[in-house]
Amino acid sequence: MNRFEISAIKTHEIIDNRGTPTIRAYVCVADKFWGRADVPCGSSTGTYEAKELRDGDSRYRGKGVRKAIRNIQEVIYPRLRGMDATRQREIDYAMIELDGTDDKSKLGANAILGVSLAVAKAAAAACRLPLYKYLNANAYILPVPQACMINGGIHAGNDLEFQEFCVMPVGAESFTEAVRMLCEINQSLGELLTETFGKGATNAGEDGGYAPPARSAAEAMSVLTEAVRNAGYADRAVYGLDVAATHFFQKESGRYLLEGTEKSRKEMIEFLGQLVAEYPAIVSLEDPLHEDDFEGTREITKALEDIMIIGDDFFTTNINRLRKGVAAAAGNAILWKVNQIGSLTEALDVAAYARDHQYAVVVSERSGETEDDILSDITVALNAGVIKTGGVRGSDRGSNYNRFMEIEEELGSAAVYAGRNYIRLP
Image (cartoon, rainbow, N blue to C red):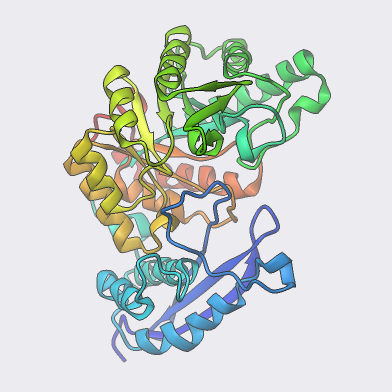
């Protein structure tokens, strides 16, 4: 048997942090080395994302993944058995060919991705390397965590339209110190929210942030910046907002229903410009306009030239969407979610294309996560400057924070924390 030959694939239906089923895939190399990967799932998904395959029956209200698991065992495994696990591109494209659709809806993007990630981990194990080193021998950068502190939108049961208000500890000296700062800020914020809104204000949103009864972006920013000051980190932290504008865009009227009023594209750009002027430590805006507004996104990118304008639903980690954005000069950063496109190879190609065209790569978790910490290794392998990690509460988030700290210790003096250089990286 070849040292890297795929000899077995196993799968389980597990649940993510929201109690929604997802796939756990195991790939074995040479009857000896195993790689395991859990598939993350989003709740605020973009129209152009690769499609998960769900069962659609009475189990889990139709959200089961037995069909996708059956596709792995009956379609994917027979095709991949005996292939060299180190030939990631060949393996991923073999699965894409088996599926034969543009959006992976036949076999399921969740089926393809689970196997794709597990193959990489099994190959790394066979090479006796940590995954980040297997993917990139020159991996050395620890990213700045963009940690969700306040949730709104469809990730929370409050009146905030914006989906996330995040803190970035750019002034930390290391990732480990950044984690400490975030934990202290989170505690400070919890105390302040209780004082300001009452004890119900510390309920959690889907991304691990608090979900207080704030009614406006300015109110959320006011309490968040005060909590950061109270923690003693006002000069060492900046902010990133996930506007997620598609989710409050009214297709019928072509306007945005925000904070009780309808706004045109021009008024949305002005609103965001005023918010940034009021809070100049805001350094990134994610999906500031709806997912098909390339012209408007070009305008806001030009108007707020010092701000990262990040495309999530806008790009969906899809190289064709990104090419269109680059050609239109729309946005200057991409939110990189491996499950949006459905295979590791395609996602890595998107990151390379973004960098080649001076777009920042912001790696991101999904609202539906497990304790799998694979995203930490992939982020370091990309030498990415920013990772959207969710909040600091819950093992589904903490597992990645903890893995980053392990990697930082493993790298020792070779490790570089991105800090204030989170955009200007190799």
